[in-house]
Image 1 (cartoon, one colour):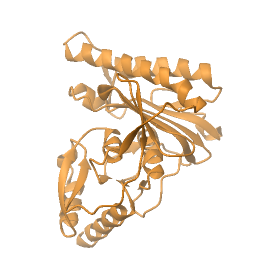
Image 2 (cartoon, helix red, strand yellow):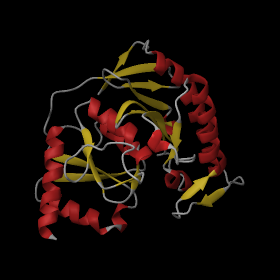
Image 3 (cartoon, one colour):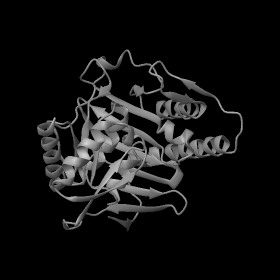
Length: 285
């Protein structure tokens, strides 16, 4: 849960706050324009995924703004990526995570920004423009939340683990089209009662932070900029994000930026249940 707190004195958070607020404003205006039926540029990438003028506009803004506060390179979904393996420290950016949600007029899109040092994420920002909310994970200490409209800060506070009779599973809107999810849920049903909650993009990580989701399984592709900020936030509260062998994701270590499947979870108890369901799923193949 998040409780009210005073404004932080963390230099990097205070530098990034107005930048991320402005990026949220840009995306919200783009979203309003798109939903109003105004002329709107939408293209297809080589992998057939959509990219819009909103992606490009907020990417341009953030690239310029980050350059003013830091001399670190930026690895962005919408930028150049061929120099990344020479970098030991850099910003990892997805200026609009959830382009498909955006195009379906669902405000479940996010801005993902994280700081990679070596193979680890050490600092993270995850913004939800549609909710006027920004989550920060400093290098030390619990995550913070900032509500733009009220200018109120909140600090994450751990609660005693309470075992609910109904486990909450976060799924993508498209998950029902993919057989792996049905198989996983069938295995999970042997272990516990659960309910499904559908949402897009890294917004599901925010749902875990807000105690609305316990486990988020992912079988279809993501990229490193989709998971880094969320993983950092979840690990800080005692949860995490692991591959199907239970190993935490490392960053900028492979030839590809594509991730394999993963399980994101709220705490170690949820991790055990999630991986146990994977084991049952494998035995039933």
